[in-house]
Length: 226
Image 1: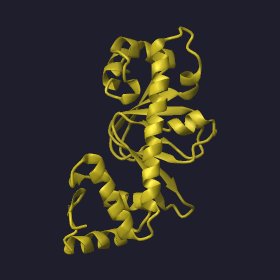
Image 2: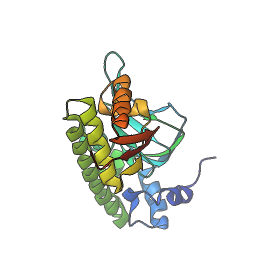
Image 3: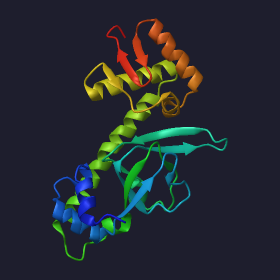
Image 4: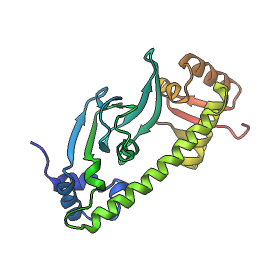
């Protein structure tokens, strides 16, 4: 049985895109926007390249990857989406028409889907919370632009070592500590950095032997000698 809007509002309240909107207002907003819920198993696609870009996803739980595939099927991870984040907002609100990327579940995930035109169209009831939602989405898109700029800076480095270290320093700065977990496994990290997994693993091993980093699976520590 599909949960009612009040239940979904409680689940969604932690999402920054709904910041400043109360539970009761959220429930009404969901009815206004015609929000749908989608549950995904690991590996399921939420959106595919070539599909109509007309929906915004809001991740309640789980993890999604935004990826691009070349003609040989090689994958590049553009962005990892965690709980409380939105996905496909730029594509859906820009009017490009079609998705140019794939959005896939990295684990079991629970997603809210909202039609983009329902967000940008004037609300019949002139809801104050509808206007607040639009402002929140604009702020969220600004943050995502900064994140994309950060990735462009990382990929501007030519070598695997420089890309890896630029990424690790960026995460350390973001988390405020030199010891941290990253959100990627080894293959996903290689896809994100646009390098071969074997080359990445060899570089991690080399840097570990030099005492510049320590790593165990997705847990890393940067040494101040770097």
